[in-house]
Image (cartoon, rainbow, N blue to C red; front, side, top):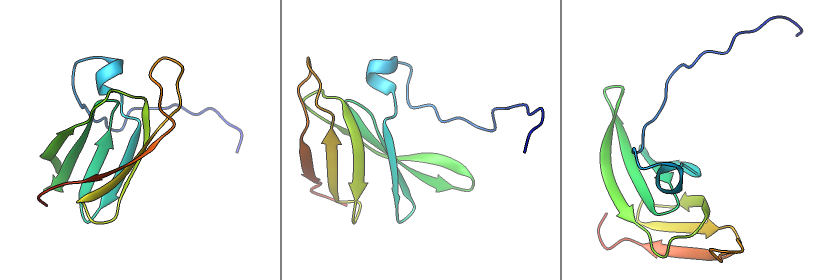
Length: 101
């Protein structure tokens, strides 16, 4: 509907203070209460406990690529896709299985 609307920031999520190339969130997936945030160099899992996000696990990812897509079926097996990029390469789908849950 036409009108004057004002946008306001309701909340935000801070991954880290290392800048865009390290801390830009490119995807988020949620499975069984764990929120998995994907950046170019890691996955960060958080659980929502008493309306606050608590760190569950950080998983470094190598090589450094332009990761853009993340999904999981059980919080142990993850599928990650990266974008094909001239400098960083990519255009691949990765399967990552964690040793422990």
